[in-house]
Image (cartoon, rainbow, N blue to C red; front, side, top):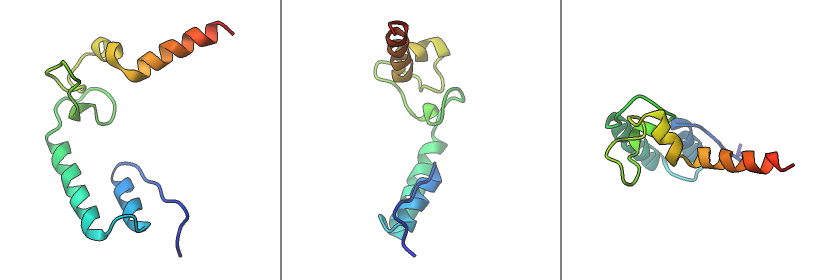
Length: 91
């Protein structure tokens, strides 16, 4: 059986790529290992998903360590929602 599509979330993404033949077993194991090492080095417990893994340009803390007001001021999601609000108010 060969699937037309494969999807996953988190480690499931790696599993889906391996199951669909996009990457081999050895590559999947390597990706899972690299992901695990990166997650072990994550700092901070606030935020969304991978926030503890990324330090925004110009800051010395991860997104998981920054307070919500700072994150909202630099968030692409917050900026998109602000623009959407303006557009929706004109309708």
